[in-house]
Image 1: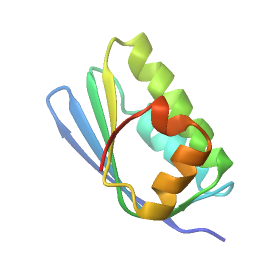
Image 2: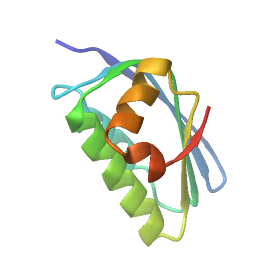
Image 3: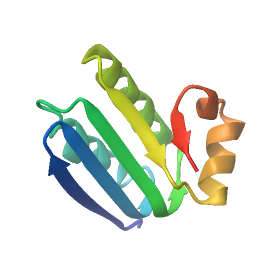
Length: 103
């Protein structure tokens, strides 16, 4: 079973979420709930993926959903420091063109 630790830091309208471990079919709902449930008043969402080792298609769906949520709020989603394997997944799925990624 995958393990995921989610660290959140809110600073005014900016929410920074650091994901540690794995986002898979078991942990994607936790990722979705924890972040989606904390978007009130958030105009800038930063996902720090430096310590994320794995993301399945379930996790990618959460990313797309968060991007849509932020767009609907006229906010911004930034993906920071994805590891090379996460970046490869984002590129392979075409999401790298859709998301704002800061390497």
